[in-house]
Length: 458
Image (tube, rainbow, N blue to C red; front, top):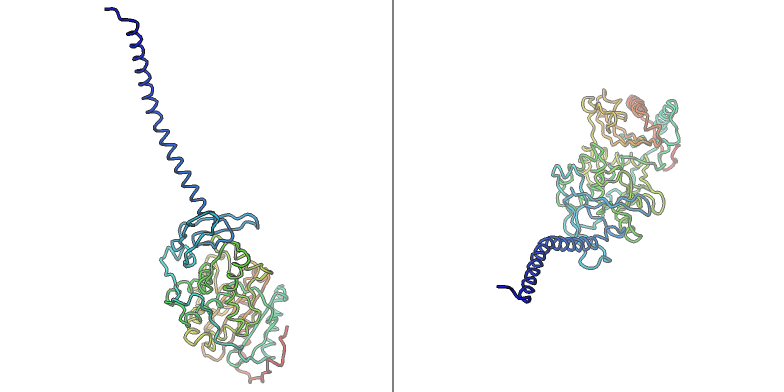
């Protein structure tokens, strides 16, 4: 039977609709993945935008840097944010509202060196209510030393020796104390100079004063850090201790008011000694490099500490260094007798060549190239803290003979590359002083002159 035209139209329409349906089905199948991908992308962008807004205050120099975040300033206008993911003791609480609000930080311990984390070293903690406690040195006046013309002759010989070796006299300072008699003499001994790592003895003294004052829960938590700071002269251990005793941390560059707060806390180590008669001393600057903080040199708040308002590096006189050694290891009156004994034990050096000879000529060695090296064959007890940079060589030491007849303190700072590069001058000086001081035992005692009646001899 022949179909009518209307039937044909209906058939064509049905065919067209069938084709469209098949086409739309394929299109939908192809479109769905793209729609889903677009939705996921939109969600990701929204999430990232929210995260960026929350983290934005970290790029502001007004925000305090948490332990896991370090801001290294390449210049005054460009700051590079660097993240460390291996410091577990730093927690950031994200901002809960707009990106214009400052990031709120939870109070956390300062970041620890990587080796401390790897070895699972303890984290010292203060007792409740002791977070901002400041301590004072128990000795508020200097010892009553007496000037000695005989000791001055020895010091003058040392100066002549350095000149004979072609070394400059202007950057040299010397203090010599006969611990048995309280006599002293020196050369430019009241000139403040950069002490290098000698400063670490001063930080140790503040720490033990805090421990004695009951600020810290457990003294033993500090033992591994003190050992590395004093026995190995480790800068990172020293930095960690400075952060702990001053309740501060290295931060990005700070605005005026926040920096004033940080500086005031850091300078409590200066007040500790200045109020005890260590005039004009500055021991508030860290020693560098500090690679665990990504600070090969002072940056951020550390740069501000050095240069605000004026250039202000660590400064100690040899008279001050000799005094502290005298108070710790001879009088044993620094902080307390018990604390002094502990500190003096940390400062003891083994002069047996097997103990200090190291094939690595570039590694810091507290004996080689310093005062103890030339005394290794003598029967002496030797306590010291040395410092060495590319521009200076410094040391404070106490030498006691085995027969206990002679005990003296010798502090020498040579603030010049010439002294830094000379590995022989300190051993030569030490040998000369040892011979002269032990020879005094066979001579009648000379009558000392009151130090207050005679100015420093330069």
